[in-house]
Length: 358
Image (cartoon, rainbow, N blue to C red; front, side):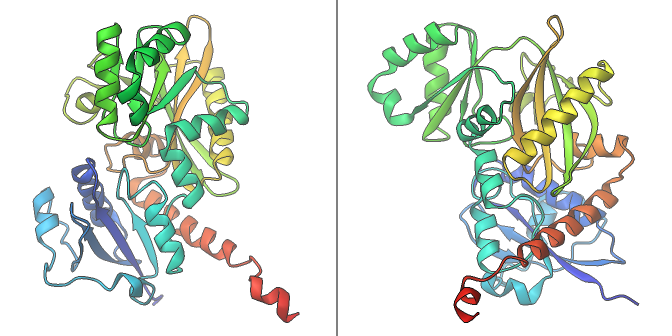
């Protein structure tokens, strides 16, 4: 009988997406193939404390039961994880989880992990840097401007004037580094713009303002490393004016159409642009790429890439792949294999010391 791999699932974290991460962890832990893997849940609480737990039984379904089923007296030796598990499946959403910080730590302790590395994670999380890279790669996207919180505090009127003149109203205002649609507002007038800028600045020191693009919201999944595949396309039909946090997690009216009812030519363009975006950021493992499609003018714009998309069975990314014929448990299995593949590929790099020993 083949030896089972031990998978460490790191979840929770110090961000506003803490509860979202717990839901994701529960889904992954319950779905992973127990004949092939043993699972070690590793919880990061809202203060940054690490707690190691025993196996969580399949019948446990409530978020709090996953959190408190852990042995709170058992803090893991996080620097010895390489001796404890074979690969890490990180599912901490938002800052300090999908922004390259956790990935950098896992690189330092030399352990394979699922998903993009430090560069792809960091650039994918920072919407301003992401758009800079997209622009350099020639990907079609809307106009945008970015500002620091300190700038908003000293020259709000000047900034609002520039936004109105260059982007127009309405527009979208977002924290540069935040996920799950946290801190996003649609500004329709000058007062709303000022309020939106201040609101976004509560979540990050840098905010981004994007021009309003009237179009349908389409998404596609990417899976792989150097030669990635793409899923079917999906469409978000939001019950709210736009797909904000409320619509994403609390509204029953938001609809996910999978596959999206769009022409095949649009899907083919999405696939090509999604792979280009994935490669531009040097992503690996998984990503979800979001688009706006201006149906009237048949214009497709890339909105953003998410290097750690929602990952419950009812999240868009796994649902897109399920429609493409890759079931949830198989998707987890493939992601683990891709994480190990990328780790082994990095091992092919020559060590600096070897240059001086030859």
